[in-house]
Amino acid sequence: MNDPKKPGTDNKAERAAAGVRPRPVSGIILAGGQSSRMGRDKAELTLGGRTLLQIQTEKLRAAGIEDVLISGRREGPEGTRCVPDRFPGRGPLAGLHACLEAANNPDCLVISVDVPLLPACVLEALLCAHQCGRNDATLLAVRGRTEPLIGVYRSKLSREIAAILEGERYAVRFLLDRIRCGEVPFQGEDAWLLNCNTPEDYETLCRLAGGR
Image 1 (tube, rainbow, N blue to C red):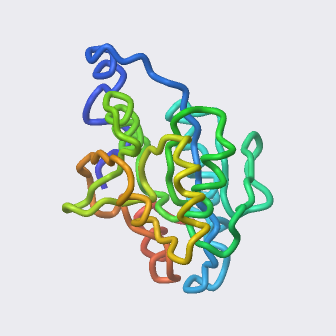
Image 2 (cartoon, helix red, strand yellow):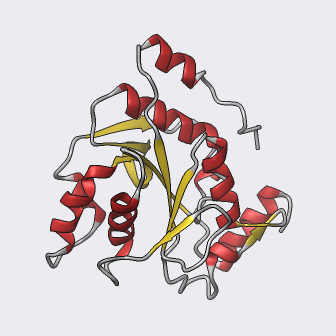
């Protein structure tokens, strides 16, 4: 794979040119899945001697985020906050809701725990686009489809999400239908977006990352 550490653009310079002063940002790692297809806890799988949860936490730190919240776990890396769902059993939207509600900052950068190869430069591009615009959320778009679990959301959306979770249908798309969403087209290698859902996926990740 190509080196993903260097972003294609200078996002800080882009924000400065647009007259945008960066707002404080919290980070959310969605790690509450059942891992049924994997057969064990995905967040505790290792790549290069670090767990997937550690990898994603360090990635948010690299983007300058100090307030890191983790959904769906009782314990996390040092300095993070684990946030329980207020609407248990209602999927990733419930995890997103709880963390947005608990966040210390007006914007939250959201990633799932099972895309460990996604580089920090993609997250920085999402932050730049979101803070240069006026959307409620800014999501990564891959071949014309948005990735709702990779993006930036305004924390105030927790109220909108709560109203959805109180009903009978609570897929993330029901939130996206109600808010203003911006998109950042994905520019990178397909491997960066590989989800670690099965043992076969994990073997592929290990091969691409050079080992466990």
